[in-house]
Length: 283
Image (cartoon, rainbow, N blue to C red):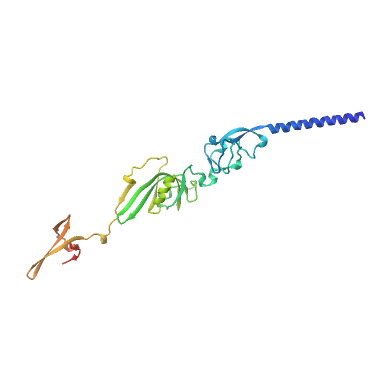
């Protein structure tokens, strides 16, 4: 009987020791700390992360309360976009972020900028060599009966996308686009809106690293060229023919007005004149 009692006592002690050990392990596990990336302040959805140190910090966090796939290195935040709101003092997980290039063009635009598309062709994009990432100057041209009016309206503008491609293609140096999307300030976008439907827009491709400013003439007007006048549109010169009767004969002397003076025109036979009253006269 005593032997059975001893065995039961030994079993009870062993079970107690095991339970104590397991309990201590659970407590230790619960109190274990890990370094996680935590938001310093509330971060709103679609916020691009350029400087992680401004928004996040490394902080000790109970391992038991850590989210799945937590961010443990600040480098993993660079060039990402916040997919959903993150509360202040909350750990960040991979599911809360997205690579900027996979979000869309809005994830690539600089803060306070706007994306605006314009219709183009090969001729207006330097033969198709204007690509995503190019810098361009924008020239506006209108034509009328008075001539052609060309103005430089914007300089050093970043091309963010060509058609639906926000990334420069690696397999070709040019492409013939139908639209380009430009990164503009709100003021530049409003200015371009006033010009884009009133004439032709041409994109002047700038070299890499060229941030110079073009010296345009007054009011940004670069050139104003008259349209060639067709022969049928030439203004007729004012003139008249003096006729002196001498019996049955007559002497005709043509005169033409130049610089408000009348002079004898010896080429009368090869030109058409208009009398001071507006009527054409001939022989």
